[in-house]
Image (tube, rainbow, N blue to C red; front, side, top):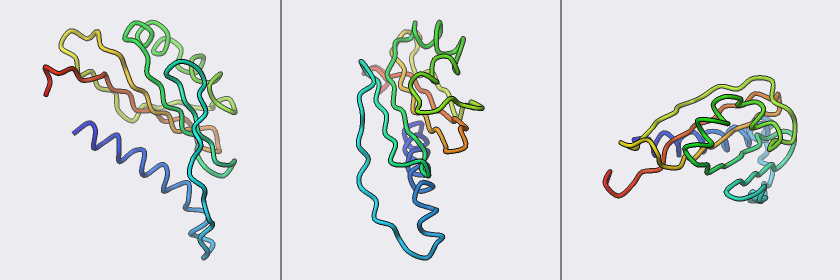
Length: 128
C-alpha cells in the first residue's frame, strides 16, 4: 500500500510538471529527467525552473532520526537549487519492527519553493 502511495506521489509530481505545457494547448517536448548524484545515496533531477525539482535520498535510521527530523530545512536546503520556504510531509511510515532499517525519502521541490516529502523505512525480508 505504501509503495502505491509513493508511486502515486511521484507520478502526480511529474504530471504537474507538464501541466503548464498542456494548459497552453500544445504539448512541449520534454526530455527524460537527468539524475545528478549529490553524494552517496543522494540524487536530484531538475528539468527547468517551471517544473518541480525531485530529490531522492537513502539514509540510515540514525541519520533520519538525529539529523533529518531535527532540522529538515537545514538538511534539505543544501541539496536543493533554491532554499525552501515551507516543508510538509506527505506520509512517513516506519515498516521495521525493530525500527533500525534505512529510510528512503523522496522530495518534491516546486518552483515556488514549497517542499513536500514522503519518507518510508526499508522493508526487510521478514515483512514479505
